[in-house]
Image (cartoon, rainbow over all chains, first blue to last red; front, top):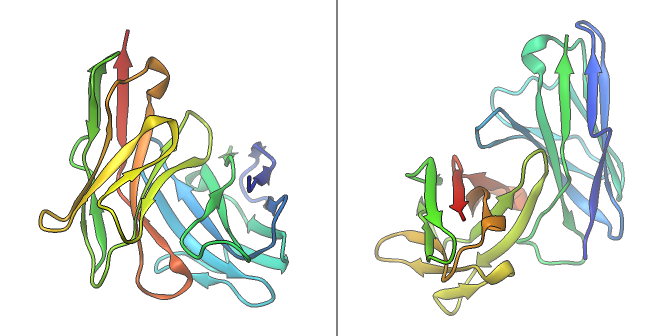
Length: 117
Length: 114
């Protein structure tokens, strides 16, 4: 089946530093990937949609200069949290749509827990 | 505007009993509906979807869901709950704009007791 990986699974960083999270589709090509943020005991909030080779589309209220998204290939998208602050601590989940699969299905990564101290 | 409501924060059920996790939706146009399950510190796993066709949709791990257009509901059901079904369940609707974005409900925590 379609597998999406995320790296790292956990990261702790100091306030003011930047951290990069990778999302990879392991056995399929993903023209579209999505980045979500999940607060404790809360639902997933879509942050942005990234398409290979083009700029990401950010949801309202998400700072594009703070959450940099790059989708440089059909199997890799990265989310960089710049100048991280404690309020950025969260669980970040990516998902990917199979280029040759159903347009209705997304495959989710296992998530990355970011803690900013 | 598209939205999804999961009215119950938590559902408790005894092992072996039937379970229902409720979901109602509001969409413009035809609804494309999904259920996902999330285990602690993990991503989401797909359970089932309704796109068109039979109102009763069967999915993974013995789960099923019934699409009810008149009640705008898509409740998740299982005839006999297992302790291992304990997890967080999300209902989602496909956003009718571009890129097939999903809008998620708030989630319902299912606790199955031995």
